[in-house]
Image (cartoon, rainbow, N blue to C red; front, top):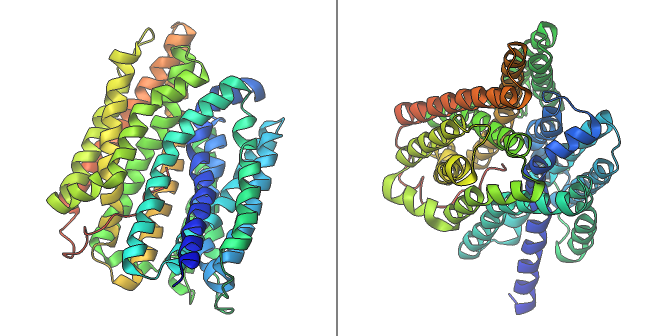
Length: 470
């Protein structure tokens, strides 16, 4: 292979990473701007959840479908289509002047993001066929994705503070255009399978079920929750009967895969709530400006990035999957509990930094093991699907958990305010209760990981898994 071909493949990898980095950024960059968005567009604290969840639900619900469409119609073609959809949706987000417009645009962002993320890995695998180069390429991809969280919170703070919240979405426009043009030159055309079945009904059923569940939780309404149960049952029936299911139910006969999915759902519920509620605590209760909020998150994100550089893989190779996962989740639970005691007049050193450090270490330890656990006792041909399923569970659990804990915080705040507690103290009391609930959920995930996971195959921990998008 010529030097030019080698250079082109690595340039193509950088472009693919840049495209997927936009998707990762939009899961974290928005958290810093949430109070500004709330004040500008008049969101309530519970309805503000939709700014995060409209993106998360469509992203998680359609990720597996996006991967299947890439297999059928060509990964390059689907990557470009998803990139265009995401970039146009980002423009709509940046131009939003109402709650409905922003939420709808965020949902459209999630659709484009799901397609881009689902096929980016396949494109990388096709570009790098040599095992040594593939490992290096995947390591670079994993580092960029893990670092996206750090870049997101800092960039969100800088843009919101220097300009306004609209700019956190508009920054995607030049990046999206550049990635699109470069992909046309650097990524070779590839034909898809051209035929096959696509489980659109399954994808719509599970996404609709979770949207109804989130709506029912936020609005404390039984009817949407019943509808969610009906759609969930329909999803299970579809997956059991369709010839090419989105999620083959037989896959869950694997004990470790089933456990990893349950653990991922519980853990992400606490982590998503931490990002959301701690950003609000820092701005609403402590009075931080957006840039200060971004800087406050840096310790946790830098620690997670350090783990992604190889520390996590070394720990897994030394101790296996179960111990790092359960210990990491336990530390995350302690970090959430630390935030539960943060007072109205709290300081960064005493009340914020300890929780950020604990969550950074815990999250860094647990990210790769939860994916490796999912893949540890499935057949090699199903490893990609297993990874995709646990990523989807992570996003869905985070969306539903965020809705539940944000609603719990709002309800507690209302009760305290009705009892005569002043507004800031009542708001903080709601956050504290939600953090306690999040800590309990994360602790339960740690217990399940410690008691239900069993040692996988010998090669289960011999590599670095791609980080979950969070």
